[in-house]
Amino acid sequence: MTNNGTSQSKKDRVWAALDQFRIEIPSWGFANTGTRFGKFVQSAAATSIEEKFADAGEVNRLTGASPTVALHVLWDVPNGTADVAKIRALEKQHGVKAGSINPNLFQSQEYKFGSIASPSAEVRKIALGHLLESVEIGRALETRDISIWVSDGSNYPGTQSISRRIGWMEEVLSAMHAATTEGQRLLIEYKPFEPAFYHTDIADWGMALHLAQKVGPRAKVLVDTGHHYPGTNIEQIVAWLLHLDALGGFHFNDRKYADDDLTIGSIDPYQVFRIFHEILSAPKAATEGIAYMIDQSHNLKGKMEAMVQSVVTAQELYARAALIDREALSKLQDDCKLVEAEEMFRDAFWTDVRPMVRAWREARGIPADPLQELRDSRYVERISQDRGQRNSNAVSSYA
Ligand code: RM4
Ligand code: MN
Ligand code: MN
Image 1 (tube, rainbow, N blue to C red):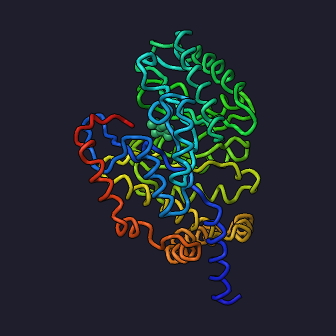
Image 2 (image 1 turned 45 degrees about the horizontal axis):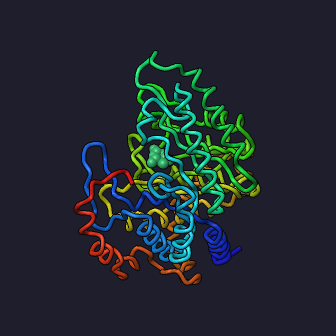
């Protein structure tokens, strides 16, 4: 095959990958956030569900790749199913749909010593009630995933029973699973530390996997890329979860030190590429249900700009991973042609796919340069004006 032929097939691979790649954006990525030290409000930040939907709709208009928005129940659906009609109307108005439903088991005062792993049966009951309500909300909005992250844990050795808390979590999550119906899934997210600093009840993928397998077939594991110790081989975890048919989805973000919630690929794009490679290497049936989601918190960068960057970066890294000729790579691996295999892998990573992605966007009627289009549209200036006054008075919360 000529050079032309090769680049033609590269183009086909990239376009096919982009045609089916979608990534969910989080409502909280548009809201004012901060560190535990200081919070700097942004005049363009969204403070209501209406504004979050407007922003998400704009990101989807610019990228064509983010048709759903993740909702946090406490921040976005505070009245439970009574809010469903309003959200339905916002979906229509802004052309984006509600995506994963995120119960909030970490902000109410009763969860001081845990939620689903609390030693208090009373508190566990409250937590289960919230989870059941989240299942209801998901069903009413016809979304698939209820995505659970719990902050449960303890700060000092001996202060809690690590082992008894396992049983309590099993009980609550089993009861929640029993309430799900066909088409719903329960995603269990793990995180090694923070806010708990001695033990976290669902600290790693082994614990999340156990809970998922224990509670039922609709439960899967959610991998948040920021929730690992430095140096962890995340793509290996992904390969194992795929093998076990237990990979529910991702929360993408990047980090340098802890759960930094930085823009995807901003510190280590090679990590994301390697994850996508494992996914694209797996049988299609095993990967079809994977929920790709962004879970980021943009403290200083503009929320809209950061979200567009995130979607675009995810597309670019997915496209780069799609470049690998996996059949040829397998052959090199089997023959233990180490350098040739590595070079093939590296070559895909180092390919600048941006011109191909641009051409794909043009062909699909999507702005060729979403970030530039955002600037040209002056959307951020408009919302800054509309929201500035309110934001300057805002006592910012996580949401
Ligand atoms: C956690 C975790 C959850 C997210 C919260 C806000 O660290 O990543 O997914 O919902 O933060
Ligand atoms: Mn997360
Ligand atoms: Mn996190």
